[in-house]
Length: 157
Image (cartoon, rainbow, N blue to C red; front, side):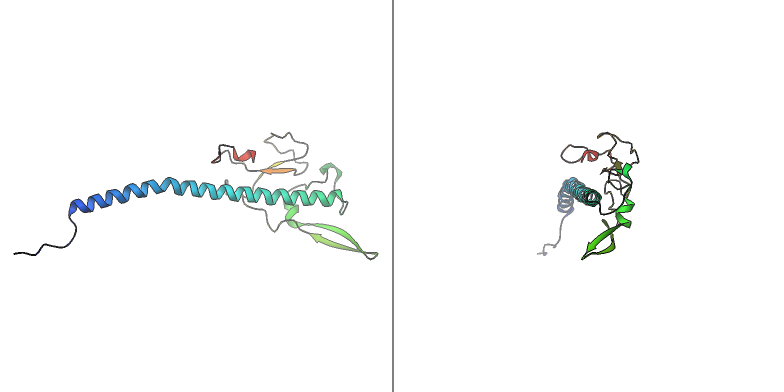
């Protein structure tokens, strides 16, 4: 009597490959959603970082810690100044010192556009304007026209 041969039949192999293919195809949309969600989290974080830096600059301007152009309303003239920093005067025990204050190490990257070029709004611009007036930087937004997982437009964040 011959011993049965060990191994898989062609049918068993085809069934196994079919099942694995179906599972792999089901995982692809989940991976795409996970990647999009990660980009959205990064976008939220980078917008918050930029807006907090703008607010800190404005706060120091309102406290008259440095001289600024009156036309800017105390907002930064561009994003680069947040990286370069400003020179402020500190009075300590009747002694005045100057200090460079930097608000950002670098301009954060817009994950949706993979760029450091952000959409800018100045204080004088309309809230829904897509064109930066150039007077100052009051707000930032992404230039992406995409839609988020929650159905909102990225540029409205």
